Amino acid sequence: MNPLAGIKSIRDLPIENKKVFLRVDFNVPLDGTTITDDSRIREALPTIKHALDRGARLVLGSHLGRPKPGKTEGLSLEPCGARLAELLGIEVHLPEDCIGDAPKKVIHDLRAGQVCLLENLRFHPEEEKNDEAFAQKLADLAEIYVDDAFGAVHRAHASVFGMAKLFRDRGCGFLLEKEIDALGKLVTAPEKPYVAVLGGAKVSDKIAVVDALLEQCQILVIGGAMANTFLAAQGKNLQASKIEGDKLSLARSILEKAKTKKVEILLPTDLIVAQSLESKEGKVVAADAVPEHHMALDIGPKSLDAFAAAFEGAKTVFWNGPMGLFEKKPFSGGTFGLAKALAESSAFTVVGGGDSAAAVHAAGGDIASKMSHISTGGGASLELIEGKKLPGIEVLRTASPT
Image 1: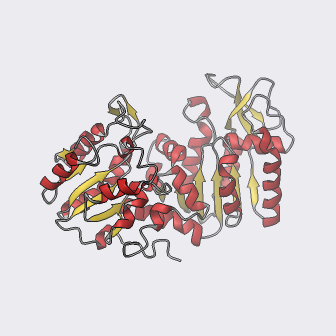
Image 2: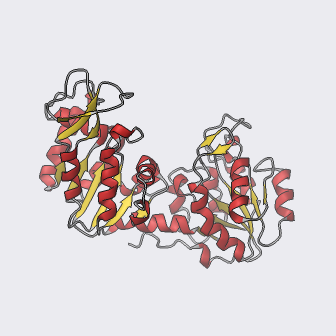
Image 3: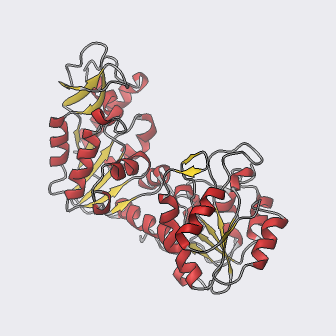
């Protein structure tokens, strides 16, 4: 099945001179009122510009952070509005709330090609509760609904799910379309050989993903702290390394299941260890020879070579989760080296959001631009890979209000 079946693109919706509610993901990192990474705003620009060029009267809605009910200081979308105005070169109107008289007046006065950014949707707890009355108030602000917030489509929230159902004309923006298309290929018909790389901290966070991948891929590479649990399950002493002690039997059952499915699992054979997360340097040791009081904080060079070799000849590669504590220089080599190897691969390469996306950008050079697709949503991308139907995507498939 085409993963985009039944979903209209914004290019197919009659948005000219219409009030268009565009759900975006402006959940950006802030240092005070300064945006430290504006990539989520930039990712939304193609859809925003398309709507404005076609004369839409554009109403943008987003959440930011996890505010307490009511206005929470430091979580206003004002910095996002200011940055968007800079990027577009036009005024962005920002009412003091997302429902009520303030946004109604601003939106009533919008002319074709003008834009309003509503205040943080999560200032109202009804947003996360998918409250029907709140969804209706949001829906009353516009005539057409478009979702371009991939990072939120796995949440059945009012602005993602409840209000979308109330529109006859609804569809996806270019970013959401790109995400569904790229990740959908991995679920419906990945070209083989298919190599999946999982890292990050916990096995428990990725059980469903592992199960789904064992049905599809030929090689499963496991690194990061997640690999520690698998190495410990094989009887290796990881000393002070982070391990999920209650998941050792689960790790063993995954290794057995992989054998049954004839999926090759690659685990680190060497590690970079140190005595503290604050250590200024690490040393390379064999995976079964971690010194006392030391912890594994990255994969070693032999492991990196073996993991990179798995990409040779691969037609599809999916990567989610760093290989170590990549934010600190002594322990970034495995993650950045893997990113470089992936960039040089001729495979269809998908990076699954969150820390993995941050790592690929932090790896520098033109590495990020060489990936086939870098997802903007960590949780949403994993749930799609698991084969789950995401509420914010499924609600767009129907052609008329339910």
